[in-house]
Structures are given as C-alpha cells and as structure tokens.
Length: 405
Image (cartoon, rainbow, N blue to C red; front, side, top):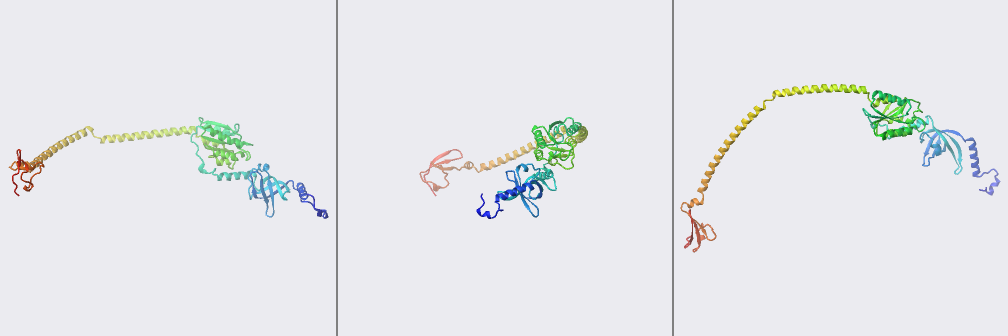
C-alpha cells in the first residue's frame, strides 16, 4: 500500500512489508543453514504430516516447523522433552511476523536416531504384550516339516541344512528365500513368514541370518518383522547373527537362538539319540511286561490253590435244596391240615347258629305277604293278614284269624 503523506517527514521510515522483506533477506544470508540444539516442546503432528513444535533451552525459545517431506525420513519418533540437534534455516513468517526455524534434519542428542527409534519401538511392542513370556509357545518335539526364512546363498542356510541333515535326515525343510539386509529386507522377511504360514504343513519356522554389524542386522529390528513373528500361527525361532544385544525379532520370537546352527539344533532331536531312547524304552517295557506276567501267574496259582471243585459245591447245594424242599412240603401239609380242622370247627359252629337248624327243632318262620317281612311281634298283624310260614321242610300260606298282644 502507499505510504501516508505524513510519513514524508521521516525519510527513514519503512512499511511493514519492506521491513519484513529486508529481515527475510538478511536471515537468508546469515541463517540459511544453521545447527541448533534444544528441547522439543508443544509438539503437534496433524494429519498433514508436518511437525510443529517449539525448540527451547533454559532461557529462550523458537518456533519451528518440519514439513512432511523431511519428517517422513525420521528414523525415530519426536516427542516433548526430547533433546535434539536440528539443521535448518531461520526465516520470518511475514503473514504473522513470526520468526521461525524451518527444520530439514533432526537427530536426538546423546543417542543415535536409530538407537532411539529402536528403544521407542521396543517400548511400544512391550506395552502391547508382544514380549510377554506367557505368549511364548513350546516348540514341537519332532516336527515333520520345518520352514526357514533367510538368504538363499548365505552361510546361515548352509549351517541350518547341515545340522538338520546330521540330526534328523528324514525331516522335510521348506526354504523361503528373503533379503536379510538392505532396503526392503524387513518387508521381505515378514512376507516370508506369512508365506510359510500359508503353506499349511510347516510346524516351526527358523528366521535369521549369519553374523554382521548392527547395521547389517537392522532388518530384524523392524516393526513389520516383529508383527509378522507375533502373528505367526506356528512357533518361530529367531537366529540373528552373533550380536550380543538382543534384536526385536529375538524378543518377539517363541525361542531365541544365538546362531543359525543353534536354531537347527533346537528344532529337531538327534535321530540316533531318538533310536537309542526307543530301544531303551522298548527294553524297559519288555522287562516290565515280563515282570507283570510273572506276577499274574503267581497270583493265578495262589487263587487255584484256594479254589475247590465246583462239582462238590454243586452237590452240596443240591442236597441242601432237596432238604429244604422236603421241609417246605411237610410244613405245607401241616398247615393245610390245621386249616382244614379249623374250617370244620367253624362250619359246625355256623351250622349250630343257622336258622335252619332252629327250624329243624319244630320252629317256623313267619313272613308277611306280599312284603316278605319277618314277623317278630304279634302287634305287626291284623286279622285277615296273609302270612307265609317256613318250616324245616317246606312252606305254608295261612290267614290270621285272631291277634292277641
């Protein structure tokens, strides 16, 4: 915009835009490439992928931004409180008049970026329980099929196959070749683990490589490898070089072997030792069976001595049954005779009380006609009533001529 007319009295006055332009030009000359050490504060990481934060020390602070293209190259995760060394340029954001550091490179102070990224990944996986002892699975005792993920032409595969053939030459081995170092190695190793799981016959997987520097073994510290091992449906043995420090693959795997040779020794027993164990077990079983048979024969012999002739026992029981039958029949006859005598006695008593017996002594039984009521009182009758008289033998019909009461 045009300067106000009153500014003409002050020939040194500048517009805001002119001043910020000069500051930007000066900063571009003197602070185009600077290294600054400080502590991250107020870190923001929006979905755009840019990183916004404040870089500060005990007395000053400076706003900073790291655009997505540079932030995507970081090998560790920035966080508040982390002391870092950054490289970038200082410029003025003219729209707000803010002095800002545009970061193109960041390294943690006191520890390397790779080591910091490794420690952060370890902490994340440990919090998810991927290192927990309770999730470790036992290895199969005698796997029929073993999968191996390693470089096809490396020393590791030679050592593994040599030991497997020496210890158990009848075991089937499926090799899934993979890059074990360099760009893309971690992704290839993880894919190899998944491929062997998809095969369906593999019972245990060996993942590893021969010795090398920490940088050579870095593929086995990648998150993609750790998660592939954790999600494997079959147990995984990690055999990663000769490094003293444990790799993340070692921590996640079900078993850790210091070398590929040791891994091969872990997953299969020695065939000759198995044969010796089978023979020893067979001998022990035969001895135990012979001892058991001998003990049973002695027991049968002892029982035979205590066992009497079953025919004698049958004869005794027959005699007992015959005697019991005779006693039962005799008791039945006696009971029947007593019952018959009692029946005769009761019959005689009943006969003596029978009205018919009374009639036989000259009495008769009078009944009214036509009702058939037994006449027990003369008051029941009127002259002219008809009666039926029952005698000991026969009946008669009579008419009442006179009633006396």
